Length: 66
Image (cartoon, rainbow, N blue to C red; front, side, top):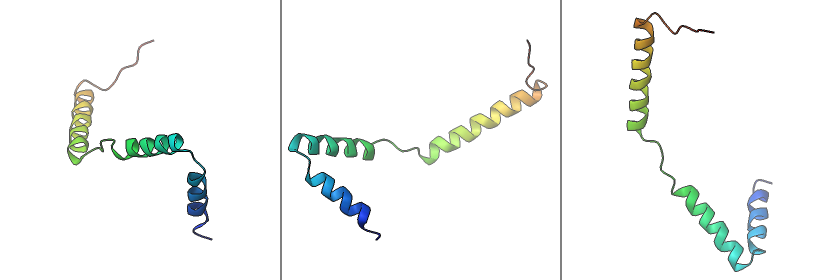
């Protein structure tokens, strides 16, 4: 049955006291309010990786020393 996990979660939440329910709600709110990575972040990351790649290529690559 597709709804069985949903029903199980609802039953578990119904058994919580008010303090526990508030803690669960705060946790869920915290998950939803985390900033997401934007298109600007990925564009900046792409440019930075390209610059690093170019710098390594112009310097003859990364040389390992022991």
